[in-house]
Length: 378
Image (cartoon, rainbow, N blue to C red; front, side, top):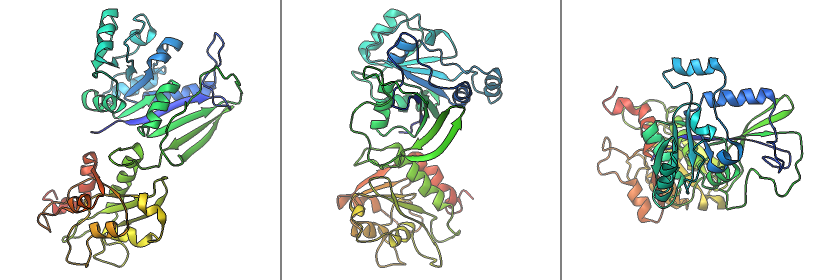
């Protein structure tokens, strides 16, 4: 199911704390950075904080700049983003500012938590999710029922930890303040746990007055059937590569990327790349990878189209090349239609050999775009 783009936003001390243990909130950001956060909020469809943040900080979570609110209205959006929180117990203060400022609010909770929240008179759309609150269910509901495409998560540390550990965070905007807290009892940004493998990719580093903004994105693929934000990133890249293919009336335009388990890109390719008019995307990518590289055994192939099971232009189809390379996981956007080969089932061939094949249909339109002329849509 499609998810929103999930942006984690936080400010920390040099030693990784979100706050100290004093009675007043420790201000870590600078005035200019507060304005930047306001701009990021204005660009979001929804802002999420955990129940603990509502209890501890009593935030309003507003877009403060009137010009930004007016720009949202001009775009046909409400002046304020949807405000979202998650509480398994539903035990929340109905007088909190969160419920009585800004626009619409939604609370995701358990069945028991929903009964408790309603009894307290919580002023929100209360959505029960069964006996436990699963983050994937929250994100799917936000996307499907509230049209949320971009979700800004402002804390607290438990929420950030859970989303990052689950591989559901697309981006982390981290502001580092030039001070040290040094209190082991103070809240930290990230707690212990089994985080996704691989290094994060630094996409921006910027000084804002006396603080530094660093923006990171995950790179490590998921494992097995678990889909991460990085999986979506790499499959989107494969779809972009498909648009680089020289046009053809007799073959699909396809892009492919081979990514190691730690998020390192091993190779990429696209159909009809270079001087070979019949090379397929997976074939082009795998030809660039070292066949003796031990990382192939735990790598993932991302292809905008299901790898072929049969072809006339080469002895081995792409599904066989993937098997020969020892790769055990494939993520695709689109099943091969019967345009050139009937009963194509590269996914079935791979799965029968023990390869985990995942199809992320939310990228099907992007995969089809450079092939419109072959699908009767030109």
